Image 1 (cartoon, rainbow, N blue to C red):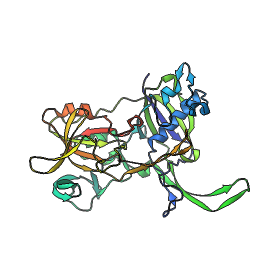
Image 2 (cartoon, rainbow, N blue to C red; image 1 turned 120 degrees about the horizontal axis):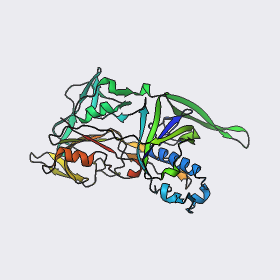
Image 3 (cartoon, rainbow, N blue to C red; image 1 turned 180 degrees about the vertical axis):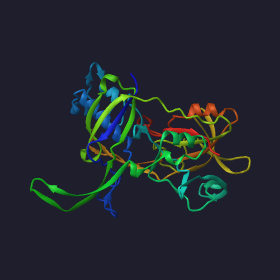
Image 4 (cartoon, rainbow, N blue to C red; image 1 turned 135 degrees about the vertical axis):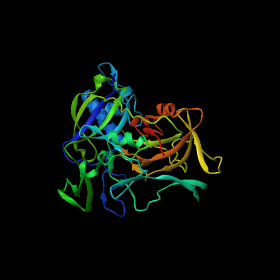
Length: 379
């Protein structure tokens, strides 16, 4: 079986509801998450595979074994909380047939000029004494929100260089937000529900934008070449095209030095305790030779000393459990673009560390593509 790239193109607007319920006190408009949550993409993939195999969803819901061309579907694509053999890379956006990547949160902009946050001097804060927080000496720069990088741009970032402006793709080129107003209906009485107005914000991608993910481990015979599937809230349609997965991008990283930058390409489920900002629970707080607070641990066999980090606001995801017909618990995820500034142990070269860590996944639910790391250097 070979890895396949699943591309979703809109046939209408899309709505990937944020985690707040409609009855939330305060702001009444519910916005969309974009790119869509990993579970939404995985659910659409499993739905189309099931439909292609003429699955009986009622039997499937009860855990009854169903086969297609001799293949046990439950083993291949799993159930509500078991993903079977299904493994994803992504989801990610495609613009003009090229994959887009998140902008690192350490990159700021002022007057069309880009700057990186640097590790500052030690300060006393809630994380401890002599903690090295990221700083920017020049005031007025802001994070690049609602922007993405092309592959050449990410290559520059991972090499410790500033990305060229042409490699940064703004939201306005990718999609527009469309506000919608609705009201609940009582179909039995043919009247509207009193006081049950609601507002949503849909996504309308531009003509050259797709949502994509790479599917691993699932038998080729189960995967259609094309199809249509309900995608996200309100059952809006998406056209699906399944092709051979493209080759992994080749990022040429400098091989000298000890400074390692870890960057999240997809949101990560790192837990919910006070240390959930660390890339692994193995990292423990300690002090370096200068007495500065650092965190030391191991990722995929690579010993690292974590000096500082730039982390975004947590992404909240919930969703609907179709199998059990109930809402899913809302969870918090570390957002894509978050970065950790680390240093290597003397016993491993930078080239060896990059080979072991690039593409490694941190946190839970890695089968859904969560916690995908890109590795570079920082100056």
